[in-house]
Image 1 (cartoon, rainbow, N blue to C red):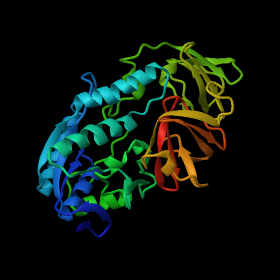
Image 2 (image 1 turned 180 degrees about the vertical axis):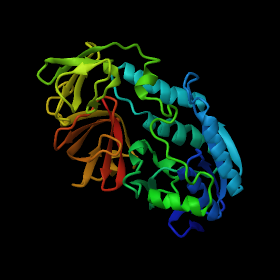
Image 3 (image 1 turned 30 degrees about the horizontal axis):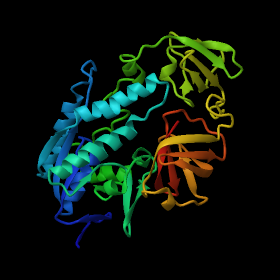
Image 4 (image 1 turned 90 degrees about the vertical axis):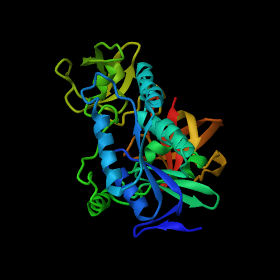
Length: 376
């Protein structure tokens, strides 16, 4: 069967198949679309409409993004559709995020957006509309090995997004293409100029998509009651006040505001929080293990565990297996993974790490993303 070739990379997509590209209005998805179009694929640009709160000052931002996506589609002379996933996004991403913070956890809305919206609802709707595949502008790579697929980190280490994609299943991987995953961001920018795309010089978006430039704390303050409380040092002594413990996560730098203070001197890092007592514990050592959840800082239990291979029996156990606890964070060596039951496992780090309930822990073997789970 014929395959798509371009001067950069071979993909696993058969020619003359229909591909719906998640055209967000940004440069990465625009270049992804252009590469597929140049390769002779039957491409449809699909803008995914998500949820935006009415009170946000940038509530019209999605219309601007949609306009840019339409301009790209017109420039490339491809069909364009808008897929409304507002309800799915509100339930699976926004409500999940708010509930997590209310419970004192550290949820990752980007993981849920990919799992439930882009790889879930969007993929299902695209296939129902006649697509054979979907494509996105993620910096990640999809590799076919015999009858199975692997998720690889993107070539550009500074842009790699595989951390957010650990919920992939084999069925989903068989239907998803990452046209720019093998490129550096600088190469993507240059291709955008060569294609004369109308978004070639557009700045990259930052943070959670529906918030725009609004701080996460300001957003959560609209939905969660909060009050000031004590900041304690690692000896238990009060050293200041905070504006709400729910807004902080373990390992985060504690920065006093105009209405808060502390006497320890900067920089300080959050090593524990007690949402019942509304207290934060801070330390000058960002890697100081918290005794709030375990005594060593090495052993953690994960729930909602997913193995991209489809089974823990197919997960390689090598000295190169590592775990990442934050987006673009360092990969930590582990001594092993203990399988407790379906969807749960135990992980032991070589050195103490600071991980909060709700955070995603993602496993790698070299540059292969094996899967991940959520800290209990």
